[in-house]
Length: 169
Length: 223
Image (cartoon, rainbow over all chains, first blue to last red; front, side, top):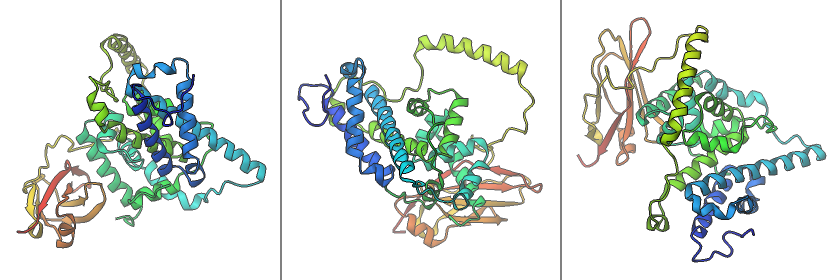
């Protein structure tokens, strides 16, 4: 049976607190990072994702697998929900004859071209940094020491700024 | 959608093209990547894809937020006995045997079948802190902060970059013939209390550079 997280948490339920916290974090993240059209649906998106999580086979046993499992599954189902919502929006735009409002490529390619031109390791480090990863997380993701990650992020950013003509410094 | 404070980050995000999502990797891959559980080839391709796809960049950014929050302890979590680590650094021992065998086979295949590399592998020098060292104290007064570094034999000039802890470049000096740089007051005053990061590139006569590690500088006011 599916539960509705956040609406009826049982005090004795060991994972109710986890679910409530995950829900709040995901709602904030969707609000921060998704375009307004999707961010407006944040409560629904996250609620749907958590319902799907609990409806999965064995979903009621998620608590026994630990908080890390809950975070992982919650993250993946919310990304799936966002993608599904985007597909629906795209289809609605196509039916309505809209073009989705994508900016022209000439205005957007310079920084991506510069990023492409960086050395492999610097490019990977800078890309993750620009996505919001801290240096410790860049290090974990790419299998480096934190010091290496720090150095590669700094130097990659310096290369990127140089390529862009110093206008960002 | 919240705009990031860093203009470079804003520009990067604005430049990412929307795709139709058909070639996007599954969401599980992002989590596996952040846990260090993805093979390197797939990891690189995932990271590069995120640099060319607004939707996957969004997935990366949400992941970064979730990781920050998930890593922060809560009173409830602290009260529980031995929670599972969120990001496993090492695989369990039973996974090491097949992994080791696979690695051996893969290494043998790579050695025997690998074509010559198309270009020399990039060299990151100075990561280990070998030849270029900071010679100035890492705690200095705000108005008299001077950066000094060790000599690199044969270096013609030195380029210095000064950054904030969140990696915004606040000062650059290029072509220095001496091995020290007095920080401008405006830069050090802005950084009082938070500190700065800095690094040096020694430029050799043939144009090659020797890069330093990144050093920290803390600034105390009131001197």
